[in-house]
Length: 155
Image (cartoon, rainbow, N blue to C red; front, side, top):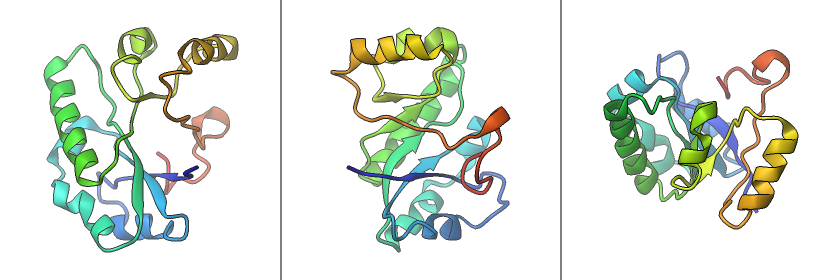
């Protein structure tokens, strides 16, 4: 079983990516997260990969940048870049946060879906119905009112 911690890429340059990743050297795995689609598309992939080349830390999953399926061009560009990053990191899991109405469309096409905005009973029913295709459970480290438990790790 793998355990990892979500580490958000510093898209706005507010902290050091090497240091953010390095905190988890003993754990060995991190989820590489992205947030802003426009900023994500401007980032050089080499900058994202560099800490992984110089440490023993592996990416357990890639957290897809926020998106809207209504903008197919933007979605496609984010998807293509995310796949290139995942392949470069030998990572086969991608976390995607679709909108409420898009859950049914996306869940069968993408490896992992998280942050489902449904009642717990509905989520448990979905899990039971789809347990054969679920690869991993993504557990958020958010606390009350969507305030992250560690602001430097999870936006």
